[in-house]
Length: 149
Image (cartoon, rainbow, N blue to C red; front, side):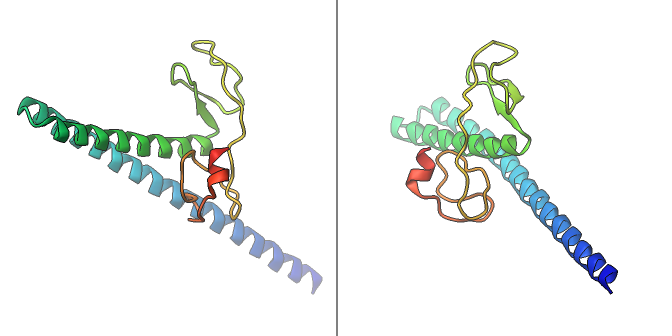
C-alpha cells in the first residue's frame, strides 16, 4: 500500500507543477496580448498626434495627446520589464540592448548594468515592476515602501 501512496503523492505533485506552469504560461500570454494591444494603441495615438499637428489643433489638445502617448509608452515599458524578468534578461541602461540578467556590463557599449534586486510580491513572490500599484500575477496591492525599492 505504501507504493500506491507514493504514486498518488507523486502524481498529485506532478499535477500541481503542471497546473502552476500552465498558469504561468497563461499569464505570459495575457501579457503578450496586452503588449500587442498597447503597441497598436501607441501607433493610433501617433496618428492622432500627427493629424492634430497637421490641422493646427490647440496646444492643449496636442499636449493631451502627447501625455496619452507617454502613458502608453510607460505601460509598454512596464510589461516589457515583467516579460524580461521572466526571460532572465535586463536592458542596458545606456543602449537598450538585451543582456543576461546577471550581466555586470553591456557587451555592446560597455556600460555598467545595475544589479539591484527587484522587490517581490509578499503574497506570491513574483518580481514587482517599478511603479506598479498591484502585483501583475496575483493582484495583491503593493505597499508604497515596497515599490520604492
